[in-house]
Image (cartoon, rainbow, N blue to C red; front, side):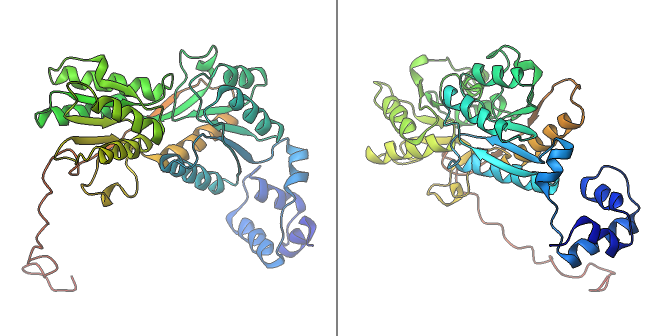
Length: 359
Protein backbone atom coordinates (compact mmCIF):
# COMPACT_ATOMS: atom_id res chain seq x y z
CA UNK A 1 0.00 0.00 0.00
CA UNK A 2 1.54 3.36 -1.02
CA UNK A 3 2.49 5.80 1.73
CA UNK A 4 2.67 9.57 1.97
CA UNK A 5 6.44 9.28 1.47
CA UNK A 6 5.81 7.45 -1.82
CA UNK A 7 3.53 10.28 -2.96
CA UNK A 8 6.15 12.88 -2.01
CA UNK A 9 8.87 11.00 -3.88
CA UNK A 10 6.71 10.63 -6.99
CA UNK A 11 5.69 14.30 -6.99
CA UNK A 12 9.21 15.52 -6.20
CA UNK A 13 8.13 17.36 -3.05
CA UNK A 14 8.50 16.97 0.69
CA UNK A 15 6.20 14.88 2.88
CA UNK A 16 5.18 18.13 4.60
CA UNK A 17 3.97 19.53 1.26
CA UNK A 18 1.85 16.42 0.66
CA UNK A 19 0.38 16.88 4.14
CA UNK A 20 -0.47 20.52 3.41
CA UNK A 21 -2.24 19.54 0.19
CA UNK A 22 -4.25 16.81 1.91
CA UNK A 23 -5.17 18.81 5.01
CA UNK A 24 -5.35 22.34 3.63
CA UNK A 25 -3.09 23.52 6.45
CA UNK A 26 -0.97 25.85 4.29
CA UNK A 27 -1.26 27.36 0.79
CA UNK A 28 0.56 25.37 -1.90
CA UNK A 29 1.44 26.64 -5.38
CA UNK A 30 -1.12 25.43 -7.95
CA UNK A 31 1.36 23.47 -10.07
CA UNK A 32 2.82 21.83 -6.95
CA UNK A 33 -0.63 20.94 -5.65
CA UNK A 34 -1.53 19.42 -9.01
CA UNK A 35 1.68 17.36 -9.02
CA UNK A 36 0.76 15.95 -5.61
CA UNK A 37 -2.81 15.18 -6.71
CA UNK A 38 -1.52 13.48 -9.87
CA UNK A 39 0.85 11.35 -7.78
CA UNK A 40 -1.97 10.39 -5.40
CA UNK A 41 -4.12 9.34 -8.35
CA UNK A 42 -1.32 7.42 -10.08
CA UNK A 43 -0.29 5.54 -6.94
CA UNK A 44 -3.82 4.97 -5.62
CA UNK A 45 -2.84 6.49 -2.29
CA UNK A 46 -5.56 6.56 0.40
CA UNK A 47 -4.98 8.87 3.40
CA UNK A 48 -5.09 7.24 6.84
CA UNK A 49 -7.91 9.29 8.31
CA UNK A 50 -7.70 7.54 11.69
CA UNK A 51 -4.02 8.40 12.09
CA UNK A 52 -4.67 11.93 10.91
CA UNK A 53 -7.47 12.38 13.48
CA UNK A 54 -5.13 11.32 16.29
CA UNK A 55 -2.71 14.07 15.28
CA UNK A 56 -5.19 16.85 14.48
CA UNK A 57 -7.96 15.94 17.00
CA UNK A 58 -10.34 16.19 14.02
CA UNK A 59 -12.12 13.29 12.31
CA UNK A 60 -13.48 15.35 9.40
CA UNK A 61 -16.91 13.91 10.11
CA UNK A 62 -20.27 15.54 10.82
CA UNK A 63 -23.09 14.02 12.85
CA UNK A 64 -26.62 14.49 11.50
CA UNK A 65 -29.59 13.84 13.81
CA UNK A 66 -32.84 14.17 11.86
CA UNK A 67 -36.16 12.52 12.63
CA UNK A 68 -38.47 11.00 10.03
CA UNK A 69 -35.72 10.34 7.51
CA UNK A 70 -38.41 8.64 5.36
CA UNK A 71 -40.14 12.02 4.98
CA UNK A 72 -39.39 13.39 1.48
CA UNK A 73 -38.66 16.84 2.93
CA UNK A 74 -36.00 15.50 5.30
CA UNK A 75 -34.67 13.32 2.50
CA UNK A 76 -34.00 16.49 0.50
CA UNK A 77 -32.30 18.05 3.51
CA UNK A 78 -30.15 14.93 3.89
CA UNK A 79 -29.12 15.16 0.24
CA UNK A 80 -28.10 18.78 0.73
CA UNK A 81 -26.10 17.99 3.87
CA UNK A 82 -24.38 15.01 2.29
CA UNK A 83 -23.41 16.84 -0.90
CA UNK A 84 -22.03 19.85 0.98
CA UNK A 85 -20.15 17.69 3.48
CA UNK A 86 -18.56 15.65 0.70
CA UNK A 87 -17.61 18.81 -1.18
CA UNK A 88 -15.65 19.99 1.87
CA UNK A 89 -14.06 16.61 2.53
CA UNK A 90 -16.29 15.53 5.43
CA UNK A 91 -18.01 12.22 5.99
CA UNK A 92 -21.48 11.96 7.51
CA UNK A 93 -22.82 9.90 10.42
CA UNK A 94 -26.65 9.80 10.51
CA UNK A 95 -29.01 8.97 13.37
CA UNK A 96 -32.79 9.26 13.81
CA UNK A 97 -33.94 10.72 17.18
CA UNK A 98 -37.59 9.80 16.37
CA UNK A 99 -38.69 13.20 17.71
CA UNK A 100 -38.35 11.80 21.24
CA UNK A 101 -36.43 14.08 23.67
CA UNK A 102 -34.89 11.23 25.67
CA UNK A 103 -33.83 9.28 22.59
CA UNK A 104 -32.61 12.51 21.03
CA UNK A 105 -30.13 13.05 23.85
CA UNK A 106 -28.89 9.45 23.56
CA UNK A 107 -28.44 9.79 19.81
CA UNK A 108 -26.46 13.00 20.21
CA UNK A 109 -24.28 11.37 22.87
CA UNK A 110 -23.64 8.43 20.53
CA UNK A 111 -22.56 10.78 17.73
CA UNK A 112 -20.37 12.70 20.17
CA UNK A 113 -18.70 9.48 21.29
CA UNK A 114 -17.89 8.79 17.64
CA UNK A 115 -15.82 12.00 17.80
CA UNK A 116 -17.64 13.91 15.08
CA UNK A 117 -16.23 17.41 14.63
CA UNK A 118 -19.68 18.95 14.90
CA UNK A 119 -23.40 18.18 14.65
CA UNK A 120 -26.44 19.24 12.69
CA UNK A 121 -29.63 18.51 14.62
CA UNK A 122 -33.34 18.94 13.87
CA UNK A 123 -34.48 19.35 17.51
CA UNK A 124 -37.55 17.75 19.06
CA UNK A 125 -40.47 19.60 20.63
CA UNK A 126 -38.63 19.55 23.98
CA UNK A 127 -34.93 20.19 23.29
CA UNK A 128 -33.84 20.94 26.87
CA UNK A 129 -31.83 17.73 27.35
CA UNK A 130 -30.30 18.15 23.91
CA UNK A 131 -29.17 21.72 24.54
CA UNK A 132 -27.90 20.89 28.03
CA UNK A 133 -25.74 18.05 26.67
CA UNK A 134 -24.31 20.15 23.83
CA UNK A 135 -23.50 23.00 26.22
CA UNK A 136 -21.99 20.75 28.88
CA UNK A 137 -19.64 19.09 26.38
CA UNK A 138 -19.06 22.22 24.28
CA UNK A 139 -20.10 20.45 21.06
CA UNK A 140 -20.22 22.66 17.93
CA UNK A 141 -23.76 22.30 16.60
CA UNK A 142 -26.27 23.83 14.23
CA UNK A 143 -30.01 23.45 14.77
CA UNK A 144 -31.73 22.69 11.48
CA UNK A 145 -35.33 23.30 10.34
CA UNK A 146 -36.66 23.99 13.85
CA UNK A 147 -35.49 26.88 16.00
CA UNK A 148 -35.10 26.53 19.77
CA UNK A 149 -35.04 30.12 21.06
CA UNK A 150 -37.05 30.34 24.26
CA UNK A 151 -37.52 26.58 24.50
CA UNK A 152 -34.25 25.68 26.23
CA UNK A 153 -31.83 27.58 28.44
CA UNK A 154 -28.64 28.48 26.60
CA UNK A 155 -30.09 27.78 23.15
CA UNK A 156 -29.10 31.28 22.02
CA UNK A 157 -25.48 30.08 21.94
CA UNK A 158 -26.15 27.89 18.90
CA UNK A 159 -26.45 28.65 15.20
CA UNK A 160 -29.76 27.84 13.54
CA UNK A 161 -30.79 27.31 9.91
CA UNK A 162 -34.43 27.09 8.91
CA UNK A 163 -36.98 28.10 6.29
CA UNK A 164 -39.51 30.87 6.65
CA UNK A 165 -42.79 29.47 7.98
CA UNK A 166 -45.21 32.19 9.06
CA UNK A 167 -45.30 34.35 5.94
CA UNK A 168 -45.65 31.44 3.46
CA UNK A 169 -48.49 29.95 5.52
CA UNK A 170 -50.22 33.34 5.60
CA UNK A 171 -49.95 33.44 1.82
CA UNK A 172 -51.75 30.09 1.46
CA UNK A 173 -54.58 31.34 3.69
CA UNK A 174 -54.99 34.68 1.94
CA UNK A 175 -54.97 32.90 -1.41
CA UNK A 176 -57.84 30.64 -0.32
CA UNK A 177 -59.70 33.60 1.18
CA UNK A 178 -59.28 35.45 -2.09
CA UNK A 179 -61.12 32.58 -3.79
CA UNK A 180 -64.11 33.23 -1.54
CA UNK A 181 -63.52 30.79 1.31
CA UNK A 182 -64.62 32.00 4.75
CA UNK A 183 -64.10 28.82 6.78
CA UNK A 184 -60.51 27.70 6.29
CA UNK A 185 -59.32 24.78 8.42
CA UNK A 186 -55.75 24.04 9.43
CA UNK A 187 -54.20 20.61 9.99
CA UNK A 188 -51.31 21.72 12.22
CA UNK A 189 -48.18 19.82 13.18
CA UNK A 190 -46.91 18.43 16.47
CA UNK A 191 -47.41 20.82 19.40
CA UNK A 192 -44.15 22.24 20.75
CA UNK A 193 -42.27 22.30 17.45
CA UNK A 194 -41.27 25.79 16.34
CA UNK A 195 -42.48 25.02 12.82
CA UNK A 196 -45.92 24.21 14.22
CA UNK A 197 -46.22 27.39 16.25
CA UNK A 198 -44.88 29.55 13.40
CA UNK A 199 -47.30 28.08 10.89
CA UNK A 200 -50.23 28.58 13.26
CA UNK A 201 -49.09 32.19 13.63
CA UNK A 202 -48.99 32.52 9.86
CA UNK A 203 -52.45 30.98 9.60
CA UNK A 204 -53.80 33.56 12.04
CA UNK A 205 -52.05 36.40 10.23
CA UNK A 206 -53.53 35.22 6.94
CA UNK A 207 -57.04 35.16 8.41
CA UNK A 208 -56.59 38.65 9.88
CA UNK A 209 -55.28 40.01 6.57
CA UNK A 210 -58.41 38.63 4.87
CA UNK A 211 -60.71 40.08 7.55
CA UNK A 212 -61.69 36.62 8.83
CA UNK A 213 -62.02 35.65 12.51
CA UNK A 214 -59.82 33.01 14.10
CA UNK A 215 -61.80 29.99 15.33
CA UNK A 216 -60.00 27.53 17.59
CA UNK A 217 -62.21 24.66 16.41
CA UNK A 218 -60.91 25.04 12.85
CA UNK A 219 -57.38 24.04 13.97
CA UNK A 220 -56.63 20.35 14.56
CA UNK A 221 -53.19 18.90 15.30
CA UNK A 222 -52.01 16.05 13.09
CA UNK A 223 -48.71 15.52 14.95
CA UNK A 224 -46.74 15.99 11.70
CA UNK A 225 -47.53 12.41 10.59
CA UNK A 226 -49.78 10.89 7.94
CA UNK A 227 -52.04 9.00 10.37
CA UNK A 228 -52.33 12.08 12.55
CA UNK A 229 -53.16 14.21 9.53
CA UNK A 230 -55.95 11.80 8.62
CA UNK A 231 -57.42 11.99 12.13
CA UNK A 232 -57.15 15.78 12.25
CA UNK A 233 -58.78 16.22 8.83
CA UNK A 234 -61.56 13.80 9.80
CA UNK A 235 -62.22 15.82 12.96
CA UNK A 236 -62.48 19.06 10.99
CA UNK A 237 -64.78 17.48 8.41
CA UNK A 238 -67.04 16.23 11.23
CA UNK A 239 -67.76 19.72 12.54
CA UNK A 240 -71.36 20.95 12.35
CA UNK A 241 -70.06 23.70 10.07
CA UNK A 242 -67.01 22.11 8.42
CA UNK A 243 -64.40 24.13 6.55
CA UNK A 244 -64.75 24.70 2.83
CA UNK A 245 -60.98 24.85 2.43
CA UNK A 246 -58.15 23.08 4.19
CA UNK A 247 -54.48 23.91 4.71
CA UNK A 248 -52.12 21.12 5.77
CA UNK A 249 -48.88 22.03 7.52
CA UNK A 250 -46.55 19.38 6.09
CA UNK A 251 -46.46 16.81 3.29
CA UNK A 252 -47.06 13.75 5.50
CA UNK A 253 -50.25 15.27 6.89
CA UNK A 254 -51.33 16.20 3.35
CA UNK A 255 -51.34 12.50 2.46
CA UNK A 256 -53.40 11.75 5.58
CA UNK A 257 -55.88 14.52 4.81
CA UNK A 258 -56.34 13.24 1.25
CA UNK A 259 -57.06 9.79 2.67
CA UNK A 260 -59.71 11.22 5.00
CA UNK A 261 -61.35 13.04 2.10
CA UNK A 262 -61.36 9.92 -0.06
CA UNK A 263 -62.97 7.83 2.69
CA UNK A 264 -65.83 10.35 2.82
CA UNK A 265 -66.24 10.45 -0.92
CA UNK A 266 -65.22 14.11 -1.09
CA UNK A 267 -63.40 15.55 -4.06
CA UNK A 268 -60.74 18.25 -4.30
CA UNK A 269 -61.42 21.01 -5.15
CA UNK A 270 -65.07 20.24 -5.97
CA UNK A 271 -66.15 19.63 -2.37
CA UNK A 272 -63.21 21.15 -0.53
CA UNK A 273 -60.22 23.25 -1.61
CA UNK A 274 -56.79 22.10 -0.43
CA UNK A 275 -53.41 23.82 -0.12
CA UNK A 276 -50.39 22.40 1.64
CA UNK A 277 -47.10 23.40 3.24
CA UNK A 278 -44.26 21.30 1.75
CA UNK A 279 -44.09 20.53 -1.90
CA UNK A 280 -42.86 17.09 -2.90
CA UNK A 281 -41.81 15.33 -6.07
CA UNK A 282 -45.19 13.80 -6.92
CA UNK A 283 -47.41 16.76 -5.88
CA UNK A 284 -47.60 17.73 -9.53
CA UNK A 285 -48.85 14.23 -10.43
CA UNK A 286 -51.95 14.27 -8.18
CA UNK A 287 -55.32 14.99 -9.72
CA UNK A 288 -55.89 17.79 -9.01
CA UNK A 289 -52.32 19.04 -8.83
CA UNK A 290 -51.46 20.28 -5.34
CA UNK A 291 -51.03 23.98 -4.62
CA UNK A 292 -48.15 24.08 -2.16
CA UNK A 293 -45.38 25.96 -0.39
CA UNK A 294 -42.03 24.53 -1.49
CA UNK A 295 -39.26 24.60 1.09
CA UNK A 296 -35.63 24.72 -0.11
CA UNK A 297 -34.65 21.39 1.48
CA UNK A 298 -31.33 20.81 -0.28
CA UNK A 299 -30.32 24.46 0.18
CA UNK A 300 -31.15 24.24 3.91
CA UNK A 301 -28.94 21.18 4.29
CA UNK A 302 -26.06 22.78 2.41
CA UNK A 303 -26.41 26.02 4.39
CA UNK A 304 -26.35 24.10 7.68
CA UNK A 305 -23.03 22.51 6.67
CA UNK A 306 -21.61 25.90 5.67
CA UNK A 307 -22.65 27.49 8.98
CA UNK A 308 -21.21 24.56 10.96
CA UNK A 309 -17.86 24.76 9.16
CA UNK A 310 -17.76 28.49 9.87
CA UNK A 311 -18.36 27.69 13.54
CA UNK A 312 -15.52 25.16 13.53
CA UNK A 313 -13.22 27.77 11.96
CA UNK A 314 -14.33 30.57 14.35
CA UNK A 315 -15.55 29.00 17.60
CA UNK A 316 -15.99 32.35 19.37
CA UNK A 317 -18.05 34.21 16.80
CA UNK A 318 -21.63 35.21 17.77
CA UNK A 319 -24.37 32.69 17.01
CA UNK A 320 -26.83 33.52 14.27
CA UNK A 321 -30.10 32.32 12.79
CA UNK A 322 -30.32 31.97 9.00
CA UNK A 323 -33.75 31.79 7.36
CA UNK A 324 -34.25 30.83 3.73
CA UNK A 325 -37.24 31.86 1.64
CA UNK A 326 -39.91 29.44 0.42
CA UNK A 327 -41.71 29.36 -2.94
CA UNK A 328 -45.46 29.47 -3.59
CA UNK A 329 -46.27 26.78 -6.17
CA UNK A 330 -49.65 27.61 -7.70
CA UNK A 331 -51.52 24.58 -9.04
CA UNK A 332 -55.19 23.53 -9.04
CA UNK A 333 -56.14 21.83 -5.74
CA UNK A 334 -57.02 25.27 -4.37
CA UNK A 335 -59.81 25.58 -6.94
CA UNK A 336 -58.03 27.72 -9.50
CA UNK A 337 -58.45 26.64 -13.12
CA UNK A 338 -55.68 24.84 -14.91
CA UNK A 339 -53.65 27.44 -16.80
CA UNK A 340 -53.98 27.06 -20.56
CA UNK A 341 -51.04 25.36 -22.25
CA UNK A 342 -48.48 27.80 -23.55
CA UNK A 343 -48.72 28.17 -27.29
CA UNK A 344 -45.38 28.16 -29.11
CA UNK A 345 -44.37 31.48 -30.56
CA UNK A 346 -43.88 30.99 -34.33
CA UNK A 347 -41.03 33.48 -34.22
CA UNK A 348 -39.06 31.51 -31.64
CA UNK A 349 -35.94 29.96 -33.08
CA UNK A 350 -36.11 32.03 -36.25
CA UNK A 351 -33.36 34.46 -37.18
CA UNK A 352 -34.06 38.04 -36.13
CA UNK A 353 -34.25 40.69 -38.87
CA UNK A 354 -30.81 41.76 -39.94
CA UNK A 355 -29.15 38.74 -38.33
CA UNK A 356 -28.06 35.50 -39.82
CA UNK A 357 -29.06 32.16 -38.35
CA UNK A 358 -25.54 31.69 -36.98
CA UNK A 359 -25.24 35.13 -35.36
